[in-house]
Amino acid sequence: MPVYRDDVVVLRTQKLGEADRIVTMLTRQHGKVRAVAKGVRRTASKFGARLEPFMVADVQLYEGRSLDIITQAESIASYGAQITADYPSYTAASAMVETADKLTEAEGSLQQYLLLVGALRSLSRREHGAGLTLDSYLLRALSMAGWAPSFEDCARCGARGTHSAMVVQVGGIVCDDCAAPGSPRLDPATIALLGSLLTGDWEHTKSTPPQTRAQATGVVAAYTQWHLGRGLRSLEHVSR
Image 1 (cartoon, rainbow, N blue to C red):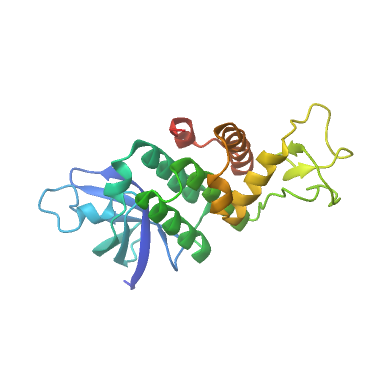
Image 2 (image 1 turned 45 degrees about the horizontal axis):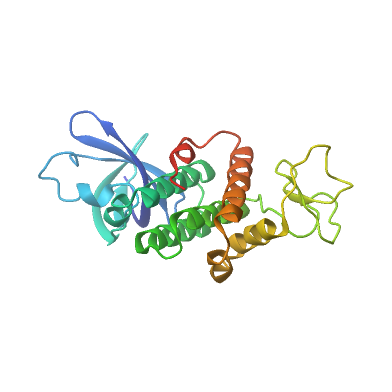
């Protein structure tokens, strides 16, 4: 059977039998892969700890009939310990890997892989705050998947100007002519923060007050859940 090797970030795991585990991974070159890690739940396992959620590893696999088999795993970045030691980081990372799991399929997705690895690294280093890092990741991941939000021009007609109505179903901020009755309105500070989260303007995000961050977080959550078509279970437990 063909053998291949790739860099992976572990999204989730589930028990299989008495000692095995099914590992769902986002790879650098092969998209999302589900594979069996045999014997990793035994205390004598050589690479069980390298295949926990949030870990980045160099993995060798061979193709199976239904699931591939992991034969080797070498650690590249051990983000798991730092992330799980901090509850806000852990809940944010859980929402990130669940989002990546829903957005990616078997085809290659290098941009999604690099984005997720960078976000997990930032969480482990406590660079920008867990909530800000998560919101930025969600907006960027959705953009890469084809659902880029508009926080400047009208998302429906493209009209330029200062708009305030937010319609997640349309794709962002819309003008008064395109806004449905009762559409929620955002203040300029919240719109500016959403734009900064999308572009990675961290200097601006850090200077925003908690109330503005809270409103932006609500918008990001609504936008994410609408476009994924189903709720993110992890998002309910995110510590803000």
